[in-house]
Image (cartoon, helix red, strand yellow):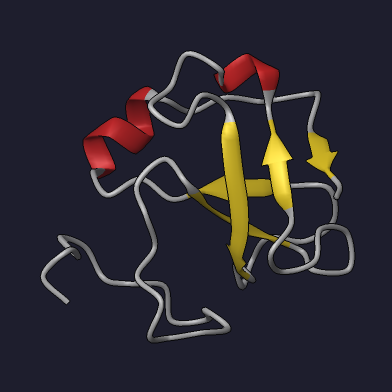
Length: 91
């Protein structure tokens, strides 16, 4: 698990799954089920192009909130945002 520089999420539904920087999202699964693909236009200029996958339940993430996994605490603090629009991609 060398990809972790910080402690991995302890509440992940799949502890074998390594969260990916600027890709993995944690969400309340009653709002965004695991595996949901989200597009956040306000984050389109990030390495993910604004596309994220809900792969974690985020123990304190409740309701209409999303937490994007960033490997660097410094980067996370520099990229704090309140985002108002989230689109769920459907097949």
